[in-house]
Image 1 (spheres, helix red, strand yellow):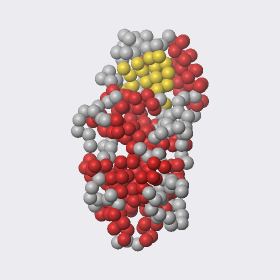
Image 2 (image 1 turned 120 degrees about the horizontal axis):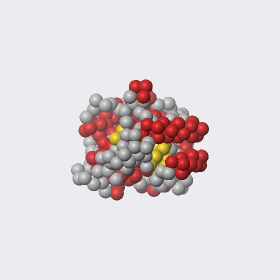
Image 3 (image 1 turned 60 degrees about the horizontal axis):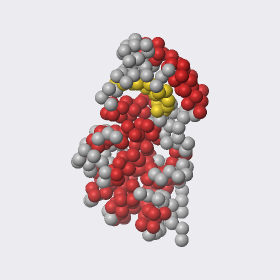
Image 4 (image 1 turned 45 degrees about the vertical axis):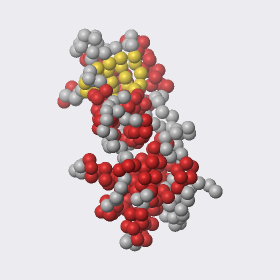
Length: 328
């Protein structure tokens, strides 16, 4: 998809959505790994710190020593503000003890960032007590900067990277131009994956055929729109597959895709009023869920199976089994 060193606006919009979905489900060590990867690409002066047995990492998850800039990550599965405040106090105290006052580098500690995966929730950001605690530390230790480092800050770092580095973080974005002939074995693999791994939601059969473009507009789909349009031309392959199989398979996949859509529709991080990317993010979240993961596949094989998954989504999108049907 991307052969040059820069992404155009459409490619960046897609990469941003893929990244937002990635952070929404990444916590703990997984989030810290993403943070470290992006920061290492972003700054030649950034160095992650590896825990050293009982000494740990000296309360330092990563730093830019020449600037006196230090980072501590907090990304639990369930955010607890009281624990977050205690972690700020304990970690900064340990950081000062080991790294402050020129103990390791002559610059010392000038900036401290408490890295939080707020995961693009309805109300992104940190709690007021977090801001207050960090400001108290800034004043007490006369730091230049002492503040939260949020998902939006990490996204800014990512989007300033080169195209190949962005791809290394979020994966290879799908390209509408590449959706061509879809192999039956890939269709079968994805449908089997959906049937085996997701809970159904019983529904009366719909399979109506509303105006495709009207539905795209009604659901405010922008980044996903080109993929759906291109994939819709290949959806005959899905009809051919289902014609060769029992009606149960079609209905089962349909029910499970609709249940997934209803689940993600109700997820808090996707329903922020005024979030122009919410519907696109829902589409790519479902795409990620139904695409079987296999680390042994080559990049080309991963791309092929993702394209087959997009065609399946286009087929059920047109039938109004996922996303909202335009009102008459």
